[in-house]
Image (cartoon, rainbow, N blue to C red; front, side):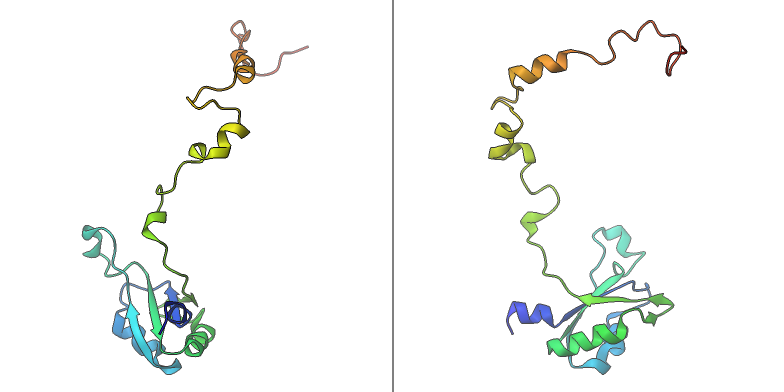
Length: 151
């Protein structure tokens, strides 16, 4: 089975209670078709895994994409251990290189320097530098009270 067809046959199940196990999830979704795999991602921190057995969501991979759609239609907004389940088609897993902070900063891109008139060494253009020298707070030192002046 190709990765794309596997993804179409995978259901995301959110809103799981801590009592839910892989076997519980398997038993709840088996009426909709043959299940290939059930995954409950563990917490990232080792100390949190002692408190919570999973992160509150899981993935169920069916053998057929039609079975996954039937499971989504029937199990979305249903209740398991007193919690309302949210069932959707699973999205593709992100590339690890695209994690938070892995992309280059906006100001590192080629067009940023020309668009915002920033020189290559990080100094702003001469025209904008003169405008910023004028302090908008200049001349407010003599005011005794905040707010607009009484006329």
